[in-house]
Length: 508
Image 1 (tube, rainbow, N blue to C red):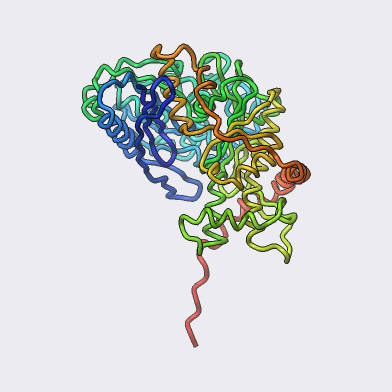
Image 2 (image 1 turned 135 degrees about the vertical axis):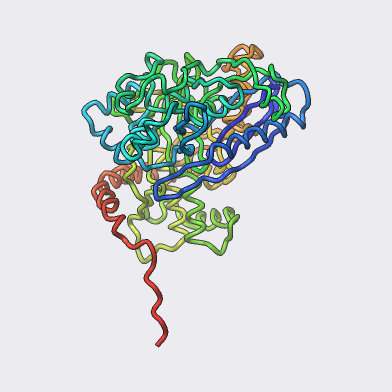
């Protein structure tokens, strides 16, 4: 058995798998995402480390002996500054943090901005650790000067578990600091961030096996100290692996809180316009695609705002309400940029918008338009994946949205492609376990994933609905471009706008 440890944005989940892909035990522990200021999204590294240890210990207690090793998955783009003793000087700044928006926009607008993206595989965006480190250099220079090492959350966890500081090519390829063609830290990116190569972890392949656990970590997890620890990779590439989307032409689509579209390729490359990312999985397998900030969070917002009487767990009622509105929501379009946006424009400027609202629209139209907006945004990302020169012949999808027949059909219609839904697997943790099995010699190749993953259902597009979404898709793209000046003006005005409602006048 191999344990796949998936360090996510809101929880860590450890799942045990055997070499036939059977899930044997699992446990998850959640933790908060702190937002102390507008645009901030950070976490306590200690809470995450504690969650990792607790989930491993719980699974080990359930299974007993027979665990061949651990392998890790992690949310990408996190950043922690450590002191010389390895103690955090900063919170773990997550992908959702947008405080470095102005730094990212300045870098993106530079004459070499696109070249930097194409060389590092990471869009120049506030999510990227490059932009975040530059923010610290400009906004908190004294703290920036005190940081001995800049690391990601998985690097920090592995340091605590094994006393070894490394980062894998997959996580590094999402920092904006590594040359994906040379697999070395990028000299220009380091100059921009005002750091040296010695302030970053040693780069290693994702299949690197660390010698084992420290004595303290062995006691805490319940594992023998010589248990092999596989470094692992980022959750996006590993989700492809966990869905069996490891061969060229097979796209993995996920919609959780956020969403993404990724296709596996054999050589690193970014399209000429910089519409996609390119992140490593193994030495000879990469994923090209785009992530969106707004997936299931849009449904949550719609419930809280438009139908609060359904309560905290009213998703089914909300989706049933959306199903009463027609395809295309009666000409109502929502740009679902509630948490700004990433692909394919890679800008922190956008805000959400309803366009086309008339007196005849009701809340069922508003809810459906929100869901359609998410699917249309994914269709734009898929177009960018194709524009990067990638064949797309199959889509496999996973995530919380897949529980909804309405949303499944809507995605197939918006993409105008059959969408296949694998059964049973936790994508990133299963991907981590498979990568670990290859690293430990328990399977010949991660290509077995394509055979181990069973397809539970295939949803085919309904021609009339697909035609409606195809007609509306250009409007989604045009609206983004048309509203960029408005987004910029809103951001400029935001600090001067009242944060609280006016006081209620006293009764006469």
